[in-house]
Length: 173
Image (cartoon, rainbow, N blue to C red; front, side, top):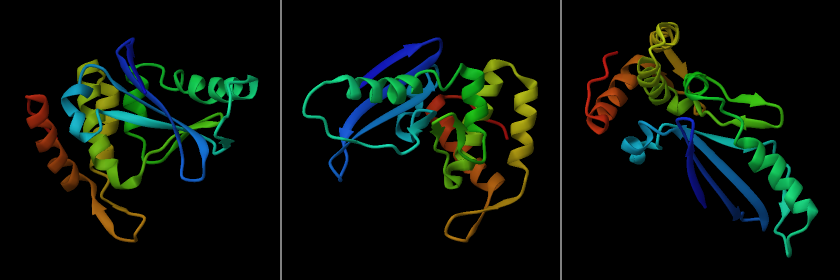
């Protein structure tokens, strides 16, 4: 596992062997300013994943391993351009693909991500982003993968309360 910060973003990368015996890489990119305070809530980050191409667990370091990691894990370090891009990604209602990489954004955590994006938009001083996020908060119920619906605004208010406690300031919605 490796952690580092650059240009206001915090990176967490790790490699593991999955249940099928394949090599798996993972990268989470989040906000370096607010992420640590939200540790128990996922650090205000997005998980970047590859298109699903797998590689058997390597027996030795060779050029195919280097290429696999460079294209996947290495490429994931450039997925999120800056804090503004992170805000846009957090507020997306669906997964975002860029080439062979994507940010996995489950619908169930959409209201929580919208609150995180709102905090970030306000910190960035972006009235445009804040307005777009506010509009998404007021969009009405969304359908979850289990068929149930969830009131985005009501759920977001609950997350705003939790995040306010963790961050030490009120998050008005």
